[in-house]
Amino acid sequence: MRRLNFLICFIATIVVPDISSIYSKEVYIPQDIINTTWGTSYYQIGLIKGLEDRRAIGPASLKVDENNDIYILDAVNKRIQKYDNNGRLLLSIPIKKPGIDFCIDSDGHIYLILYSRIIEKYSQEGILLSEYQIPDSIKFVTNITHVKRKMESIVVVETGEQRSYLFEPKILNFNADFKKSSKLKSQKGYPSKFIDAYYITQKINKYSGIIKNLMTNSEIEVVTSDPLASLVFIDTDKFGNIFVSVESFLGGPTINVKREIRKYNPNGEILARIKLYMNYYTFPNSDVAINDNGVIYQLRPLKNKVQVLKIQKR
Image (cartoon, rainbow, N blue to C red):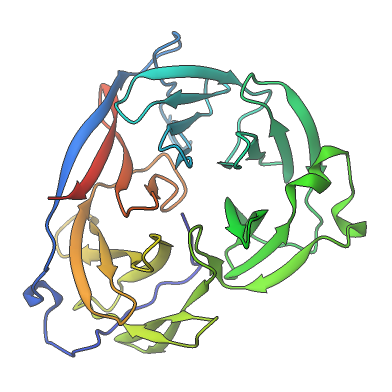
């Protein structure tokens, strides 16, 4: 899940007047696999409703691990809820402070970013193993991701400047100072969890832009009829298919936003357009996760409950 600090528009590999006319080769069907109410009990998710100019606080992030177990960051109740792929609650993992995003490594360790720019490392039992201060030189921290590169486990801190900072989890076994760590590397772009690639989005002109693979320099053009539409790279699957989030503003007396994921194959051919629901409790796209086979998961807060949708190809 990634955020840009500006709105950009995009144009497709084949230029057409309206993106809605593009045929999707694949059809994705949503299935709700988690349904739980708002509250503070073991099985519930916390919500603090916004008053006057205060923003509501709810579940902050959704992740799926290598075993396809599902995790929800329940910031209000200071815990992470872990479910199996059928939606059965497995664990309620306590955390000491609310966070903005988290990730899970191959050993099941949890890395949580706090608003105070500290990364905390937890065991699955909720034991705080260590913590680290993110240096001031890293600006606009928005997300944290776990990836594998040539059997090496790497945790990536991402920023709104489309830049990633990489380090090995083994340096997180002691209270190291990021500023002094030789393990900290900077990489332009956002990473794929499943293939060795980093991606950026670039604006071309008022109505066009590209998604660029920085490893191969290949580019995919994407189109929208809305000049204010925004596009953000989400992830790839293990086959190299690329998933991007597109938000378009619809006309009307009130702000109305259409949200979808578009799936492209590595050659830039559009395969599917999948509807997403708006979510006002997370940072943009922190409510969406893709597993290695390209199954999409979305966290969907409703008036009286929380859903997790599993959206997969028919």
